[in-house]
Length: 81
Image (cartoon, rainbow, N blue to C red):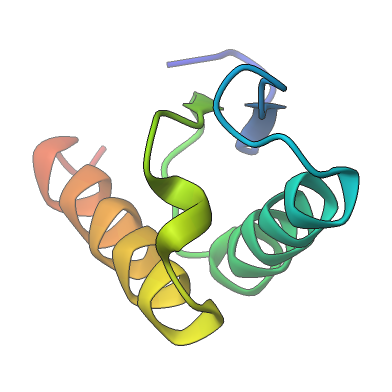
């Protein structure tokens, strides 16, 4: 947990796993948008998203669903204060 009172997002998409710049930009754009829409429900934590091999194979819908599942899991894991 951070002491700022709001969540923050860190994001990396390595060239090693996603070769084309437009694909890296798409992944980053969708991740930021997903975080932006859910940030008021999230705990005050620093979230670091590191893209791994195979992420470029996901279409926009699948990537958004995966991110939503991650945000929900973090909301469940952190006890309400």
